[in-house]
Image 1 (cartoon, rainbow, N blue to C red):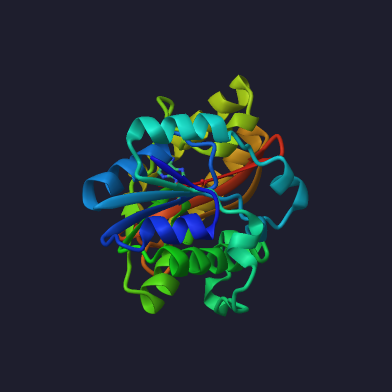
Image 2 (cartoon, rainbow, N blue to C red):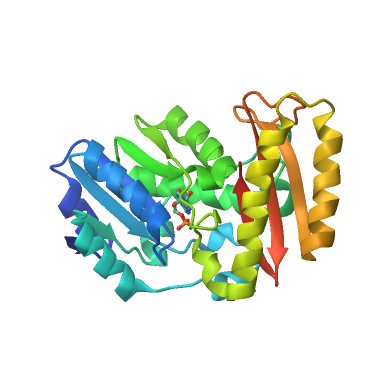
Length: 270
Ligand code: AMP
């Protein structure tokens, strides 16, 4: 495994390679990331994993500061997986000597996390464009856990580059809570609560088949979750999986949730 500490290392390592699989991450790797990496190792000639905590996608400075970082452990995991390259860019490798990129979301995109985290996806898409320009991968592997991010990045990247976004299933723990680097901030009690919320919503979705007026049932569920678990819910909504429009039909839709437990913001979809 080659560790690439800057853009010179990156260019040297990649220039003679084709069919590169790229897994962008912010580190603190868990089995969710590992599933993406394994898929890339299977489908690509070479696999490159980036670890970069992107300041532009944090709408809250404190959240950026306390985002978990664990580079030594990450490198051990990546070495064991036999990843070809790890790219650990510094801020200047991403942002210096580059064109200005101004991402503007459409009005209809400003739903779910785009509504609650101002500038978040603009920051994600900008850095994904910068990384894709530098790495020139054939495929980028991304998780359905961050479904809205997956759709937005897919739209921008596939339109502008010869590159396919490969979507990967959400990996959950034994309580069905989606793995996330942020889960490290939760104590056992909160983890168990979050597991109950996830498994409750998986079962709730099954009950929606054959029911009418789903919008109202979801609103009732949202209020129930708030009361039962004492959580702040940003949204609980049923949306179409291709355009993220609100829907009342269970076909081609997912339930999306964002909520806070003890000031830790969790998102998921079912
Ligand atoms: P992050 O390090 O949180 O920016 O995530 C890097 C990539 O891993 C993104 O494409 C995420 O969607 C994906 N990912 C994060 N958690 C999971 C999970 N539990 N299952 C599958 N993919 C995930």
